[in-house]
Length: 172
Image (cartoon, rainbow, N blue to C red):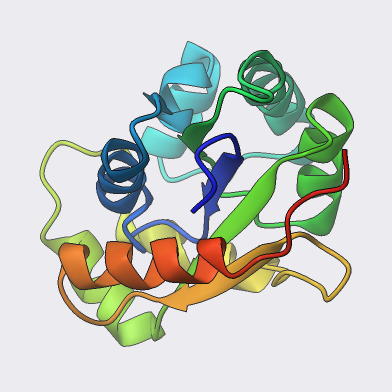
């Protein structure tokens, strides 16, 4: 992984964004930011009640994440963000054009199992179907990689770092 990159760790809930993100950041020696910390309280309240967010709900959240990523341009950083739709990723790229995406992918049964064992998280497993229904995987013209979440956090982080390191260097 290029330590000057800003990496957005994306994927549906339960794929390990908040586990892999900090491990990847520590490995690269760059700061990590947790996307959940950028949500306004109204969004957390909705999700805690099992109500999916609308695109309108997500815009201020995406803008705050984009601002953080822009501030880390050239310095490196890792931020988690579900970034399920292409339009969300486009908005993040508009704010911070050099961001790259690490899409954590996994079998639905594995993801649901991991979600059911989480402690103290506001996202209920009931919203998993809506997350998978919304997901638009990275397209060939998007800078990023997809990494399967089978295995230990350390194994996933190793695969992620290798895949990110294999990306072409961005044009100056």
